[in-house]
Every structure is written in C-alpha cells, then in structure tokens.
Amino acid sequence: MFNKIANFLLNFQYSVKQSSTMCLHRSVTRRSLFAPNIVSFGFVLMVKQFLVESATSTSSNARVKLAGKIGPTQITSMCKKVPLRGALIVLEGCDRSGKTTQCKNLVKALEANGRPAKYINFPDRTTECGGLINSFLTNKKDFNDETIHLLFTLNRWEAKNAMEILLRDGVTLIVDRYSYSGVAFSAAKGLDLEWCKAPEAGLLKPDLVLLLTMTASAISKRGGFGDERYEVPEFQQRVMKMYDQLKDDSYWTEIDADKSFGALHDELLTHCNHAIDNIVNEKMDKLW
Ligand code: NYM
Ligand code: MG
Image 1: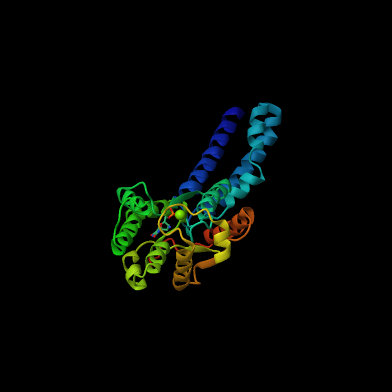
Image 2: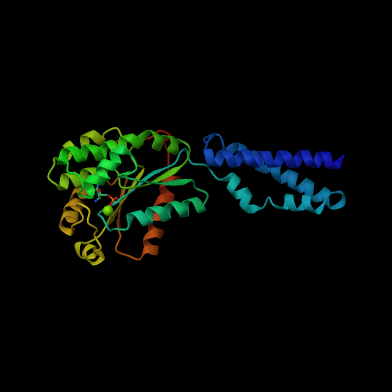
C-alpha cells in the first residue's frame, strides 16, 4: 500500500517538475508560470518530507535518494521568474573588433546559465541572397552601391519570421551585425543615410545594441584585415562616424573593445543578462 502511494506521489512530483522544465524552455505559459511554480514547489516539499520520513522504514534507499534530489538548486530554478520572451541583442562595431567570437561565447555562457540563446549573423551567407553578398564581399561580383545595400537588407528580411518565432519561444538571439551595419557601411560609401534606413523600417527592433568601439590606433594594432571589401582602417573610421549618427541611447550601450577578451566578455554578459531580465513587452517593437 505504501509503495503505491509513494509511487503515485513520486510520479506526480516528477511530472510537475517535468512540465515546469518544459515551460522554462518553451515559455509556453510564460505569464502564468510563476504562481504554479510556487504551488508545485510547496507540493514537492511536502512530498519530499513525506517520502523521506516514511521511506526510512519501508522503502528502498533508491527512493530516499530520489527524494533527496530535490535540493535548493532545483527549488530556486523552479521559482525563477521566466522572461516574457527572448531578448534581441545585437553586437555592432567595425571589422576586427572581436564581435563574432564574443557573440559565440555569450551564447555559450547564457546557455550554461539555463538561458536559451542562439547565435545569428548578418550577412547570412548561407542563403541564395547571402551567396550574392559573399561574391560581392570577396570581389567575385560587382554591384552598384544601391543594389548591394538592398541585398544586405533583403538578407535580414528573409530571416525575420524565423527570428520572431525563436524570440516568442523564449530564445535570446545574439546577433552579429544588423541593420546598423547595413546603414553605416552604405552611408560611409556616400549614400544618403535616410535612404539607407528606409528599407530596414519594420524589421524587429533590438532590445539592446552593444556597440564595440576602438580607436584608430587600436584598430591598426589589431591589423589582420582580410581581402574583403571595406577592410581598410580609413573606411572603418568613416563607418564608426556613421554609427555615431545612428546611436540611440535609449537602447544602445557603447563599450570600449580595447581590453582583454575575458574582461570584455564579462562586461558584455552583464549587459545581456540585464536586457533579458528587463523584457517588459511580450510584443517586439519595430525599426525605426
Ligand atoms: N556589411 C554587413 C555591410 O556592408 N552591410 C550589412 O548590412 C552587413 C550586415 O559586410 N565588412 C559589411 C560589414 C563587413 C562585411 O561582415 C561582412 P562580417 O561580419 O565580416 O561577416
Ligand atoms: Mg569582417
């Protein structure tokens, strides 16, 4: 008889935990999750107490062990307030500022902390449109300034729906370049800034833009520019000036990237966690 009750309670305990974990990952019941978690937490504590007390006399050591697995860590994670959705976080800056490696490490660090995250980069060279962009950047194809600008924009529009689904699903997106690169690089070539912004209007607005800055001398010290178009220090300086014009202090943070990899990582991670913790709207805003 005792075994039956104990088994029932154990199953219930784990199905409660299972569904909470699922919710944490899929954010299915994002708004209502907090309250049920407290209820299930109370229930699990009762079950745990019951099992530990009764199992000593009648049940196996394995069951005591199982009951013992519900410790403070699990309880804390079950009580965590789940964000309404994932955060859209963009890293911007000139070439060679270390964005790509930092983005990938941020994703790893967030995931290690139980925060679902995904790395996305623009241009996405894997699509047909991205293939054309790649041919342009590697000097295999030529397009006039307007055409390549619109191809870069199209490359973001084709990713928009998939990004929105991930964000709604609770996944934070760490994006390596976005519309701001599109506008800054094209405007640095002489195109009108407002003209460059226009086709980007309506894309998802990031919750946070982290702009990695470096002085001209710091850039030249890093060197290592490849053979791609734009990878010339003077041009990169013009791009930085364009970023200055696009900057919006309400959701941009400038970060001096001229420091050790670890120090920069820690600083960026703090900003990312803060952005995720401060999502207030389930709905995404639009550019601009
Ligand atoms: N670039 C990137 C643009 O000119 N417009 C854009 O919209 C984007 C996203 O492409 N020099 C430029 C900036 C870079 C180059 O980017 C390729 P990366 O991050 O090096 O792959
Ligand atoms: Mg590059």
